[in-house]
Length: 228
Image (tube, rainbow, N blue to C red; front, side, top):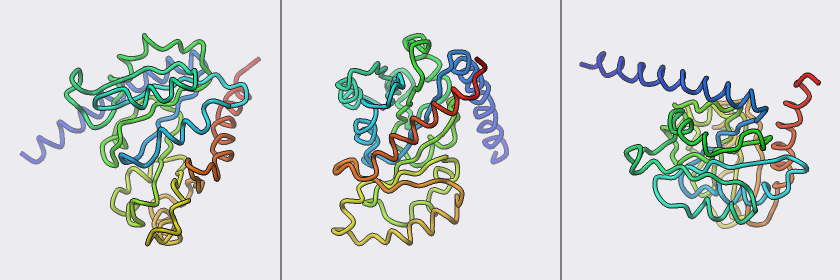
């Protein structure tokens, strides 16, 4: 019985990876770089996007907003006058706690990829499942809030291990919390010592310019590799 369950999971992930490769092919043909943006609920993903996406120095950016229900975050980002596509996992996909490659593929007809340089996929808030499902992205970014505790990299290692950048958000609250930042960074090093990390506050703006520069550089590096 245990082996049967493992086989089913492996087959589901294999099927997902096949669709993710198809998504990636579409993104590459359109010349769009894609960020899979992940975190736990309430870590501040939408606020971190609000703070930078309105001014990315010539980068045409769109957002695919993933939620179980509702469109509140999408409406916030649409206020930046960006193209935003809402993708709800309930009821069409059974209320899943993550996006997968097939869900993203179902949304692609509504996204004008040819008019974008960067697509940010804001995944459903969850520290487990989103890390297991490739979407066809170029990079993964993880937002961790200082309100969550120093042990999160050790408790949810896959999420942190698969990231290309970790944003440590809400650092304006450090003076009011029993949170050991050095311990958090040490724990992060145990699971992903090579991931860059930025200390940021979406509320005060601290560190947000470096976050903006990171996204802009992602697109510029891709442009530099594209034959003239």
